[in-house]
Image (cartoon, rainbow, N blue to C red):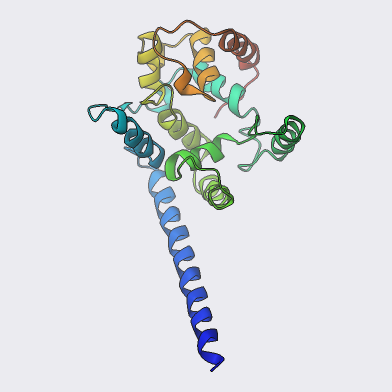
Length: 233
C-alpha cells in the first residue's frame, strides 16, 4: 500500500528531471546555433510584439541586423561603458557589481539597481520573458554560462547590439540610430552613441524627437566621460 505512492513520486521526479534536462539541451543547441547564425527574432521581441498587438494589431517591430564592424565604435564603447565596464575581464558575471547592486537595493528597500552584465542581459533577451522569478533568474544564469563558454566576446556584443530594445518596438542599433537620429548605426557620433546607451535601462520612455530629460542629459554626459576608457573586442 505504501510503495505505490512512492513509485508515483519517484516517477514524477524522474519526469521533471528529464524535462529539465531537455529544456537545458534546447537552450544549449540554440546558443550553439547563434554562434554563427544571426537571430531573426528573440523571445523578448515576440513578447513585446504581443503586447503592442493588444493595443494595435497593425504594429510591426523595427529591426535590421547590422554586422559588428558596421556599428559605430562610439556606440560599442558607450554600451560597454554604460552597461558592463568589465565586459572583457569577467566570465559572464560581475560579482562586485552584483554585490553593490544588492547593497543599493537593500538600502533603498526596493529594486533600483541590477548589476547584470551584457552576457546576462543577452541571455534574457534571447530566450526569456521579463518576469522576475527565482526560476527565471536561475535559467538566466545557466544560459549565461553557455553563452560565455561557446561565444567570443565580440560575438556576444554583436548580438547584444542587434537585439536590445531602444524605443517602443525598436530593436537593435541600426533601427535605433535611424529612429532617434535619422542616421545609420555606422554614422553615430560620440554624443549620439552616449545618448543611445543612456536610454538602455528604460528604452520605452524615449520616443523619436522627444526632448531630452534632465536625467538623460546627465547620464549621457557621464557615459561620454567614460567612453575613451571602455575596452571593446
